[in-house]
Length: 467
Image (spheres, rainbow, N blue to C red):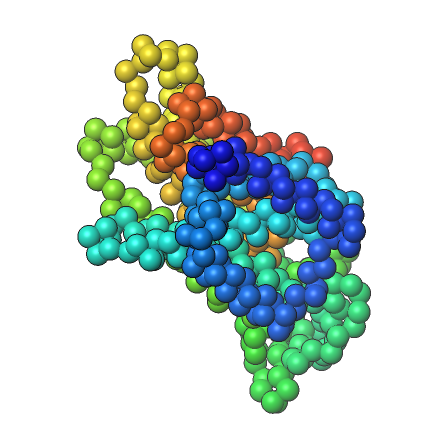
């Protein structure tokens, strides 16, 4: 304790600030994080050691007050707030490998340490909840455990497993069998599978823009097995641990192209990442199932769902477009957009309520609990929309999360609403601060929704800006 009193959120911010300072010292002394050093088996050793450290901290929590503090909201809220701020810096700056500190945030020590700290807290509160698990409290404990354990698994396995991901480009030519591919650093790599392009397929709209492009290929494995299939945008083919994606073609030859560029991706940690995602989705869904909602609270929510569907169906040109680019022609397209539009509607209502309550103050009959209801439901739709987007990205581009500008701002928005939910659970939260958080979060949401189209950092690099 400090001054014979429990630590508060202020001490939580001091710890986070100390981590950022430590990160800056590491950046100055040893340079950026070298993620390639965490390739197998180093990543497995680090994950085992990190999990053991979390268990040890929890065991010693009654002897060391700082360890006990890490299991509290007072530690979690500042950690998430720092993650939001650093991720905003990432979202506002153009990211590139080998760039300056803020231009390569994934290797920037303060950014990495804050997210490691967030994973540490997530692991600790999960153990704490397991330790105090009671059958009588099943409806609260199960969603909590699934969400926090799922987040811990996603943060750790996606980060450490990234060092083992292999992404190569193979240029295939009609009638020729190709074993070679090019790595991201330009080296030639002999692959365990060979691919022959049998036919390049291209369909266009009336204005000549691509409607579909695909490759009819023959795959030969080292064991001599031969497979004939068609690889389409959003429809990769998996063989021997490699997923084959349609990437490009000779744009000058268009439909007469005799080559096709394929991307081959191997991600051995993907099942663990997906396990964490499925746990989070299940836990998020159970939050709604196990929560008792009064009908008068559900009616306005149902009304906004209906309005949102009409907005998507009639007011958004991209949904009604007859000339969608191939990447948008996916079964994930409509549910991904619908979930986010419903989320935006609910969060918009929560924002208006927050503004109204701030203006009217004591005179308002509006209860803060009503704002909570909209944000809780909205966050459910946001979580599902974000995860559906990750599944779609995996099918279209070979990776569920690349910190693209759209993804970065989605993470910023999601984390900010998490800050609100956790802050509201704090017994000594400030009412006015709690009302300002949804307003700030909704402003950040605007950047995720349409603001990135005007953000210089996203121009020419974001996969989510379509011409």
